[in-house]
Image 1 (tube, helix red, strand yellow):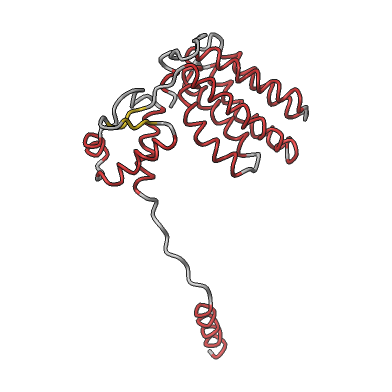
Image 2 (cartoon, rainbow, N blue to C red; image 1 turned 90 degrees about the vertical axis):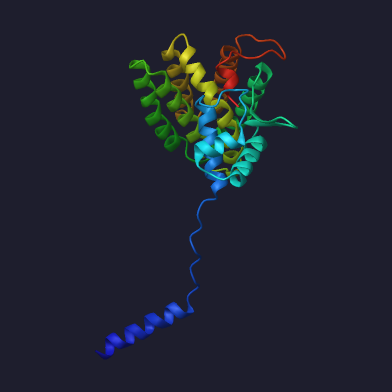
Length: 248
């Protein structure tokens, strides 16, 4: 009995001297709303150029205008939406120059990620990418362009995550939002889905062989090929094809 009493006193003493736990914070409503709107934009539910009316969106989402307004400003800061004075907030339209710039930035970001991965754990990263690549191949076999696009996106996200760089991850968040619908359009319109699967297989193989020069060359070619198809050869200042224009 005395031992139990001593243990109890010791436990009470530890709790008294321990640093108190912080209350669990709920995710801000604006963050949840921004994420919901971003998904709708990327999936095409909110089309490029469409107005993001506060009253209508507040009613659909069942939220007040305060957090909704904050969420819309977050989208504007990310470039997903644009605020036009005295008119409102609209989903961004991307032209051919925007698509080229997005993939230019992605090429730089993912090249940096590749270099970091090669220094850390290229074989482990290659194994993770190969697992997603099998999903890509299965989607191509089954004629499922949406699943192919999703696996494509996941593969590139993993590549950046494996770099271990928090700043590359933050940069990637915005770029991947802008490119997700571009990738969906690419999967839908790609003349040969298996060619897309083979491109990623070559990237993984170069990583597995730890061939930095070949890996970076293949990555750059992959980005340039995507730009060419998404823009359809659009000249400076011209709109990209309609599906790709929804990528922002």
